[in-house]
Image 1 (tube, rainbow, N blue to C red):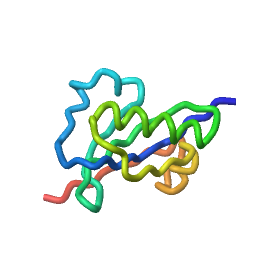
Image 2: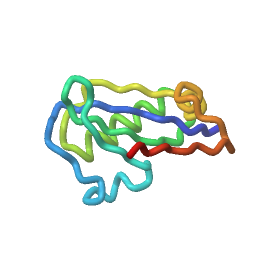
Image 3: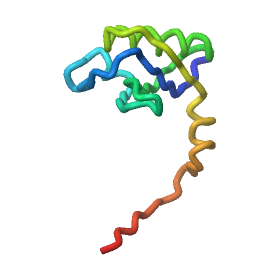
Length: 99
């Protein structure tokens, strides 16, 4: 059975990455930012048959896209990620902007 996982991979570089210029990432709904330790962090959505498969895929994709060695990887099911973030399917959220 295939499951969707969310992965956050830190790579040993601080060079910014423009995901629009890396078409290989487009299948993984990428988000790029800076980790708390200052490294480039690539977040991916990966469909895989197991947690180990998702981790291996995320590591390979992030390393290939950045040209940098992966130094950390956190992977969990999308359901677990949603639960940790407090996401409730179908629930609308609103944003209040203070003037």
